[in-house]
Length: 405
Image (cartoon, rainbow, N blue to C red; front, side, top):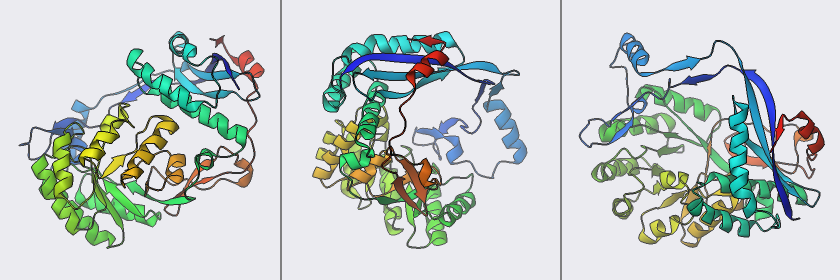
């Protein structure tokens, strides 16, 4: 099936009130005790040493929240890769409160990208991936283009074959264990949060605490004492340690049988990461920040080759890039973590899923070949049936659109 055109359908959405809030993000402050020069989220180390009144005043001073008094019209855009066959690629593209801006975002995308796709077979995903990879450099597109187009092509293949993506990739397993993040203003809050996670059936939990070596050691001991020896514990300080501090906390976490430490140092500090991996028995997971910017899977190679990553954060671009990254790591005997559920089930070296909540299995009549992510009883799986979803009624969608680009 050859790509013949790219279209965008701009439609009205339900009226909404514009809203933006910085509440919950707190602010960026020096990591306690303030000697390292590093900065982090203040929400990760605040405790009850400040009064409720102090918190309220600080919130009023530092957090802003805006909400319109009246609802405004909204607009959404849908992208379609038109083929000469029975299946097209499609996805949600964008939304906003201004129809002209939504339309122009579609026009800008189409003017740059459509010429890279016309005349290509929708099943030539690797060719398209490589072409769009270089468009990141020469058109300064960022990773969004590959993420969007690659996933559309994989979804099209799923509907064409009537199989979910993880089966097309070559399924390795049908489920993997899942953990969930915890949080709170105090150590007691973290422990209470961990108990709730365990009650929901999750196999482990991960903190994002920025209390420094002393405070995070206290937290780690409290969590292990409360959760028992068999519960998986993970620590993600989000680049808030110096190298020396990372060694110190790593030694403490080894005693407490933690599964890994995640982002202990900035991704850019590759030589310190190498030294840390050399000195700790505790696995070091890294490459989340660089990966978010689009450097994966290719930036993974030097980190693994230098021994600067024991576990690689799965940030491969698109499904195609995620598979590349997972297989690259596998060839070195290295695990990855954090991939798309389809990629996780299709590779052998992604040991556990970071869940955002509990997602029960839908009734069978709601399932189709695209699959639905299920997180139940502490396990990730994909529920599906060999049934194709109906293709969109493009004529009706066009009639419902205020603009077609």
